[in-house]
Image (cartoon, rainbow, N blue to C red; front, side, top):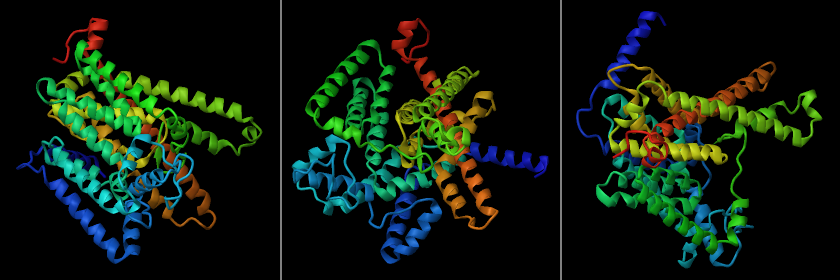
Length: 456
């Protein structure tokens, strides 16, 4: 591509990103999502092999029964009602998947069985797709297409195909983000929603950090009430919690998972066959992984600080409409928290959908500042990560069984994995920088460090 062609393409892209939408397309993406859902359901009913092929090219491996992750919940509830300790075994589940979140088992008071899987999974998927109409609307055609790319990414379709309970968390966090924009005391309704989400699946407790937007009295009241509820939760489930936490999925270095420890652990696993590491003790290998993790974490912290200090970044963040800023903060808290808390399966990245309205509003504007260039790179990398499993699966399908292609193919797969893990670290670091912008305007921290410019 010549320089002239590159400039023409850039000008066309800029015009697309700035072109305003002609009308309110609020219901168009949900309608397209529901239509695609109905079409895929019809294909699955008529030709399961074709359905599996379509999803395979999409980067998704469907299970033979629909709503596979909803089935894990209903089967656990059914077995718990029978008196089975589902933290140790779950004979009601097809694969014997043990359960790890105690609050869901409160539904054992109802006659829930695996026969409830289809209606619950169907309702959850449709509710998730309909909820996309509540997202802050894009202000340009380009931003609308970016949202479309995120909604129809393998990351999102994977969560919908399995009807995973992360969709429940998404709905609760979206509701909390919208509640935070309510006038008066009504915005405090956000925190019971976030706390309930945290009790359901632990990791959403990171979103309670958004309470730092409140004044001192409100913050202390929220903190006290939350700690009291958590203490009660721990007291009620004191017997179940150790067993539940012991079976939380741990993840795999080279699969469809993301997390801070996957890159250092994966590098150690790749090098384990080298002569100078083959005889190394496990403790020393673990120490080496810890050192690598520390180096990556320090680098990420440096990037986050640099991002937050870029000229204009804090003003771009402050000028966001409140609805977009609230959802962006919640998404950053969840994604950064998940990343460092432990490995998460790929579809947990659906929270990028909540971040995109704010990210695109900050990234695309009349001036191409240094801050905006960083945010444009962030948006591009987020979408690449959301589609990365499609690229990964396509790479694995390449013919590679004959020499010398086997070695080359393995090198390509490893290089793809490495670049994807680096991209995750960079994206999380930049999201951390946006959280520093949020913290710089927290009334609690302003009072503590005597900084100007509170939220309200």
